[in-house]
Length: 73
Length: 292
Image 1: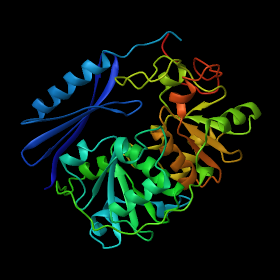
Image 2: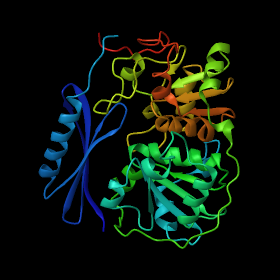
Image 3: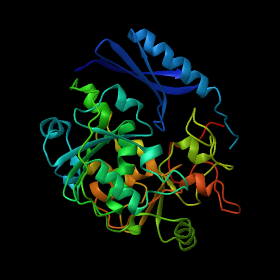
Image 4: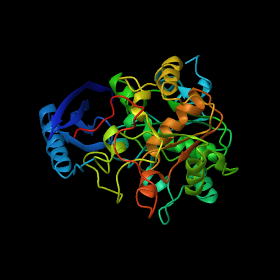
């Protein structure tokens, strides 16, 4: 199967830059959210549409990023 | 890739597409787990999980020689197999596997330049089939501990100022503003960095498409911070995987002789009683100051 409709976009969640990578394999859309600076994966989701997969990834990323504590420096 | 010190340690996506089924080539997708692999991977690739297959799962360590030999043999890899590693996060965990394979003396191991991201973005074929290669015989050498820095060596290097210390985490982790990458669990008691370390985030070595920057760009990036190979280098991050990426860049793309990966990294140093810690931005690196 070929990978189709690969796209990346950058959004901000709770003040953190997040990279969303979405692509289609067969009938399924896949989305990955990662925190831009370190580049660690936050969420990996699937959906029947790009929007569906992205919404799930954003929701999960928001949940995780909301737990991040900023310490005074 | 011609300007790199060891261009033979990289494989382009095009080369992989042409050679993925060669009898003497084994491709492995490496990630923190194998979820991405299960979505679809380079046809013929096996999947390795960092969590369960590339670390000792009982104590915190790399694989023992016996465990490593077992992993290789089970993957159908013999000593003369050409192994191509790739993964997500611009090859973070692939670099970890590369580092470990070099520690145990594998001769022909390469990283697919651009990793999973480039493969997908080029609209290439992916497969969900999980191959079951016939077992091979494998004899590891080493481990070559010159490629690895242990705590006592890092402490001695700090004391003697004998090494260039490169902290490859994000600026916010370096300053101590956050104790782990955003969204990930905090795994240390104290934030900050090893005194005198330079903050050169690993991702600066990559282009937008996930490939490595040119040798000239890399030389400038590290050279600007005084990391030019004159002194031995110790790279560290949080758990040693991002720093294995930088280790690869310094050793194989720039050709520095003495580069080691401190895989204990901040999860060790930041939990160590009495360890010296510096907080805030490095005075020598512009643009890394945390927000007040």
